[in-house]
Structure formats: C-alpha cells, structure tokens
Image (cartoon, rainbow, N blue to C red; front, side):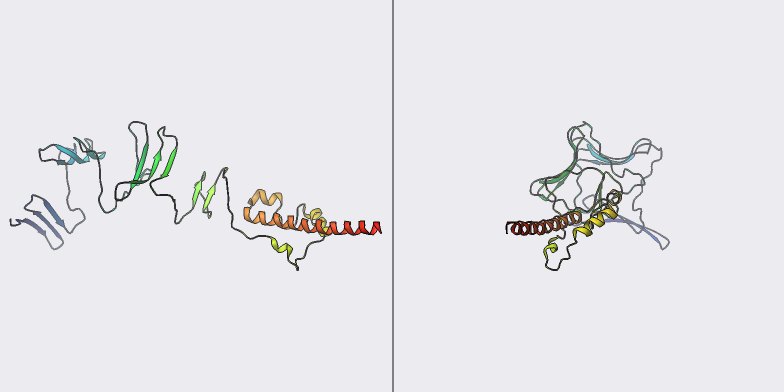
Length: 258
C-alpha cells in the first residue's frame, strides 16, 4: 500500500513556518520553527484538555487543566492505571519549594521505586506503613549507597566543609579512623621530656604538653584520630618513665643487699 501524505504548509513572512502532516495511518505530525509547536485555547474558560481514547471511543487518559484552569492534570481512567516514560528524561521546574509532591490516598506505604531493565526492584525510597519512618532501601543485589560529591548534614542545614556533619549523638559498633600513630616515642633519638619538665608545663599550662586544654576542646572539639595518637604518645612516654623508675628501684635494692 502506498503511503499517502497530506501536507498543509503555512508560511508567514520569512520567519515562521508551520507544517501539518496527516499520514496514511491517521497520525498527525506538526512541525514548526517556533517554540510553541501547538497551542490549545479554551473559548469558555472551562475544562481545557486533550483526550486519549481506545478503538471503542472510551477515554483512557486525558491531560490538561481543570474547570477553573488552575490545576494541570494527567488523568488515567477506565482501566488505565500506569504512567510509563520510555527513554529520555523528565525535568520539573518550579518557583515553589515543593517541586514534586507525593501523597498517599490510604495512609499506607508511600514510596518510589527504582527497577532494572527486567522490572526487578533494586531500590526504593519513602515512608513505612505507619508513615513515621523514612527509608532508603536496597535489595535484589543492590548493596551500596554512594554520594559522589557534596556534603551531608544530619540535624543541620549547613554541613559546611565537612563531608558528614551530624548535630546530635552517633551510635556505632565500630569506627575506623585512618591516622598517624605515636610509636616514634620508642625511637632511639626521641627526646623524652624529663619529669621536671612535665611538672613545670602542668603548673604553667594546666594540662599535658601536646594535649589540648579543656577550653580548646570546648571551642573546637577534637579529632578522634589525632587525639588518640596523642594519648598513645603520653602512654608510651609514661611507659618509658615506669621502665626507668623500675631500673632505679632494682639498682637500689641490689645496692642495699650488698
């Protein structure tokens, strides 16, 4: 069968071209060199929408504005129950804070799904059945959350330069900190402070050398890796003092026996 095409071309001046093409299958193709390829206008300021009907003329979906022209609706009916976007992306722009809103009609689970090509759900995000617990869930082989860039704030809207800023308490079974360590204290050339020097620093500063004061901690907090390394340094120095004291005690005991 030959393809029959009816073409209507409208040319205004040199800047505007509109072409309407009806194919042999009844489909309509509109071409325009302007942004608004097609415009729909109501003459009574009531419902304004386009309809999609099946072979029997039953409306399955419609898209447009409601009776007072204030609410744009994508509606499904008469057995149609799923919106599907195949290929491409969806961009939503809004001057309002709530760019996209999801609302449950039965106050049960409320979430969005991510599925693979086979339709298997790999992840979901939303509320539990009682709408109290917001969940980001992985399943069916998906096992890793990744935030490639940016900073995350929990309990704060301003994480600053921190990759993770938490305004509150953190509970964990294990925390691994990658940092330097303090075994240099046992190097042969390490200048171990004398106890007299340690005592002098305590009297003058009110805290151990290389350890932040209570005021500094209150103002700046502490870095776990750094403070643990410094505390280990003091433990190792204390160990050397004890070893030296033990040597002196042993020598005194031997001298007394003689």
